[in-house]
Amino acid sequence: MEENVNFEFKKVEDVAIFKLLESSFDASIAGLVKGELTILLSTGDIQKLVFDLSEIEYCDSSGLSAILLSFRILQSNDGHIRLASPQKSVRTLIEISQLNRVLPIKETVEEAVNELKGI
Image (cartoon, rainbow, N blue to C red; front, side, top):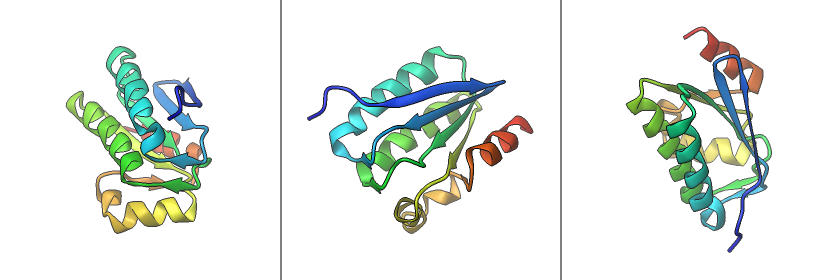
C-alpha cells in the first residue's frame, strides 16, 4: 500500500479545487485521500469544492466513497461540490451508481468553478 497520495490543491477566489494526480482511485489510496480531504475541508473554511477527476483512469467504490465523504462534509457546512472532467469510464461509474444526482458533473474545471462562483 502506498504511503502518500499525489494531489494539487488550490483556490480560485472562494472555490477550492482538489485535483488527484493518480491514474487509479481505488482502495490503495482512498483512505489517504479521505484523510487529506477531511483535514482540508474541516480546517480550511471551504464551502465550494471542485473535484478535478481528469487524471483518473480507473475508479472503484472506494474512490467514490472518498468523493462522497467530501460531499457530506461540505453538506454539513451548507457547502457545494462539483465533479469536473471525468474520463469516460469514471463518468460511467458515477452515472451507473446514480451519484450524478447529488454530485453534479461538469465537462471542465472552469465550468465547475464558474457555476460555484454563482452560488
